[in-house]
Image (cartoon, rainbow, N blue to C red; front, side, top):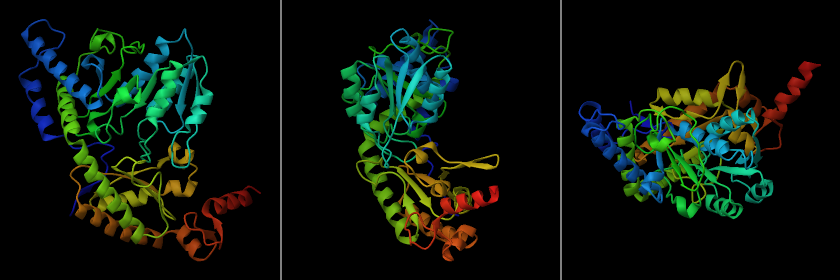
Length: 421
């Protein structure tokens, strides 16, 4: 059976060159970077090289501004909580967009219990932060602004440089979450005005188990892990040396191959979306069209009258790995907060899939996915009560309304209302 992997946002395969670079640090160079003898020195030198490689990827001012953590989520937590605590005497207010990753959302929820406040900035229907609204909610107590470079769900590229100028004008640190975009978009932290930035190497062909935080030395930051003085005293704990070495190599190749990877992924992205919309009626692209406003490797689609889980499972049966944008918790379906923020109809959000491309995908992969997905949609709609009700004119399409009936959400609400009486 053909295998097509389209879940590169979850994890990319490890680059062979990164794997080879990591090997000696499991069995040969096994010293601890904190040790003073030659074994420790060899490891410290290797870590310094990895910092330099990562710094080059984002044009950091100095390799000393690069800190390694256990993952992108820890890097986010260190940025958000570390800046909040470091600046508590100045203010306790944080500004963020309503489509941020759960690592940011949940960090802010935690900080609320510690007496901090925050303001959520709305986005437009394409998921783009409304910059004028962001400027309006900044106060003299604001000590941090949080924004993604590109959205993890719908791929929208945010106006980070514009927000960076506002942050600089107000003297407020800007944290940019690039966990979903580093290695696929050109990044210049100096041009963007980013004070802090998080990266996830396992999304650009590095290993899992390592995250990166860039911090401009002018941004005040305190540690949230307490122990030793590793990572310049900002992140206590013995470094995951092999993973850091692999991350450095992956960063070097990401910088070298960025244009080629992005061009390749963008072409496949267009081929995939053009194929899907030509073969499948009542399908919708969530977020911007492929082009300058959308990251090159993301397709987020909603297929009407069927739910995402069934699509995902049948695609997997045919060797196609994707992600579903909805998750079932107990007996209630919870939709992505990003899709809710852009005002997507609830039923469409439940029929949501995320397909993320990689450097090794091919034209034939895209054609196979289109052909198999068209058959899967036809099969699932043939078993769907929603599709049957649409055919009978009881409910209407949200994507392409016919005027023959109510939307599924309206129909469900009316049924619920009758049941309650």
